[in-house]
Image (cartoon, rainbow, N blue to C red; front, side):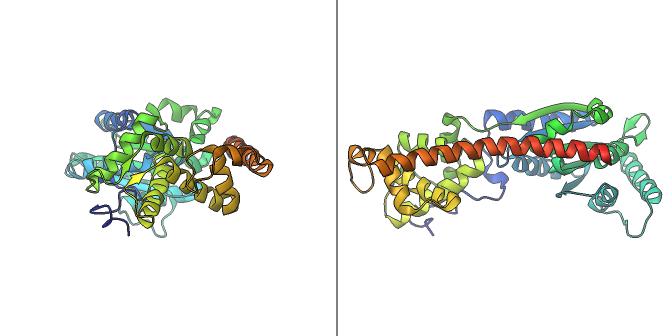
Amino acid sequence: MYESFYHLKEKPFHLNPDPRFFFASTGHNRVLAYLRYGVREGEGFIVVTGEIGTGKTTLIHLLLEELDEKKDNFIVAHIATTQPDASELLAMVANAFGIDFEGLSKAVLLTRLDNFLHEQSRQGKRALLIIDDAENFSRKGLEELLMLTNFLNNHKAVLQGFLVGQIEFRGTLQADHLEALRQRIIASCHLGPLELEETQKYIEHRLQVAGWQGDPSFTPEAFRLIQDYSGGIPRRLNNLCDRILLVGYLEETHEITPALVSAVIQELRSEHFGISREAGEALEQSKSPRSRRGSSAESVADSPSSSSIEQRLSNLEARFESIEEVIVMVRAAIKAVMSQRD
């Protein structure tokens, strides 16, 4: 919709992973180096964790593209699922490798997988198993996964694993009963958010891939507000910047200003937290003297209702942040208890 107005070839801020838009931040380069290292080593597990939306799946797709260019040397199974049952894991792996699994017992399925992996090894191919959402696996599921790495050919593993999950997966791996799995991990890394300077470069990079020629322009303060709201999480950045360009198009502006960014942020907050548009506008006017309605910061800031709204919003955001941390810990604790009961 806004593409033609800003002379872009396509939308620059897709929410779905797209390796074409990959931005090589320091953190992303480090994780990609670990993934490539794992491929070279050809054994054990590589573990990658990160917050939701940091770009883990994009890195996996990038690795898959690289491996596809060497498909004569590799055969890859990629599993992305939620809450898998331990009894289903072998069938999922077999299906991902293109092996018929219908109606087979566990023993027969294991034999079939073993034969398949050894045949690939004899043909000079390496078998890689990439699992997304690894934090959803139970203890039994992870133990089944460990069992697959016991398949050997001339004392060398015929299957290598890549485990990609959210931050709580790091806690899951510390359970006592997973000591054997930990001993198979040859490298582990965590993908964090972007810093302010990288956020600006990330936005400009995606725009350039989409054909950006400097229109629209962003002020330095606009970048800072974008960073503050998104926390440097790429998925949040994409969501926010896509909306910013849409509003810029609707207002027919070629400069992304702090006032415009603040208005879009308030619009998103009103959608997420149910804050009324009028309350949001009062809050944004109280934060900046350059409000989009032209009201002075002092007159709004002195308003009791505006001050109350700002305080309530600040408290609400702090509560959400603390709740998110508690949820992560509770989920890890529940998984640990359920694993012990399995």
